[in-house]
Image (cartoon, rainbow, N blue to C red; front, side, top):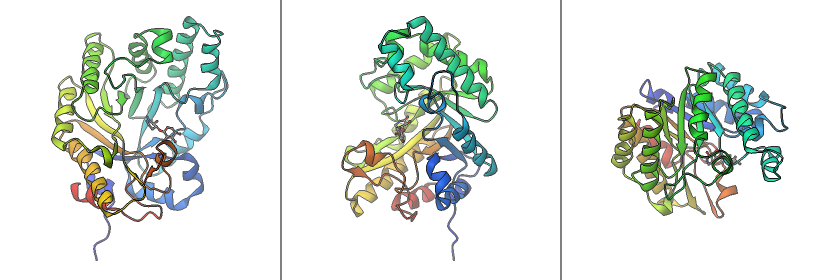
Length: 323
Ligand code: XIL
């Protein structure tokens, strides 16, 4: 009888295979915990390293949940991706309301951002192999995203964020990360220009992460296109990664959609494997039992490799076959 081969074993030394981890589920669900341990060689905190989680009140830092996640990873012999230092979502409300009311001006805000990055990266120093330093800073048109950061601090906040992160942990790899950048597009073009400009200014940028949030109704790139896109970032000297793969579908699921979903995962995984420096492939959750998708995309779901009972779906079999 064939024993099921875990993804991390099939990948071997070629790349790290990761998953986002829901901290509450990790604590409450032993089957979930066990499956993460056997299946994956890398983990990303789905929420507990985000700013609203680590500094819920101004000046009150709380890394307890994130520390538990990192400790569990260590027990499992897993690496940890850090997610994320600068984003326009999941900011603490003291910060957003402070800026909106004018209580926090631009000078003070820059100091707050600097302190946040220095503190969090220092806290995990030596324990995080890749950090998503800036998340989703370019919009779908290829312009810098209109966010609190751009409005208050101007475009220089991106270079500043990388420099502060590098200062706090000189050995961790610092990533740009976004969605809709898996293939060739105005948005990925804009990231390529941004990466080139940052590197020309000697900003410590080491990696480019494509989130990989796909939907069966939108179709997928080809694996060759993903690899071609990654290759141009690698030509700049960067590592690449698929950081948040999932493939959602309009509910209910059926055989055709599940087959299409397997194709979506296959493209992202093959795209990574066809690339010279794609160092990690991470899924944004691995079981339909715990997924952000139904809560964010009305009428959609079933986006993960395993179903709600942790049974393999065609996408999981496809991932095994590709690896
Ligand atoms: C999502 C989490 O999965 C949810 O639990 C949370 O409520 C919102 O954020 N892009 C990202 C991730 O970079 O941080 C997001 O994670 C999904 C989209």
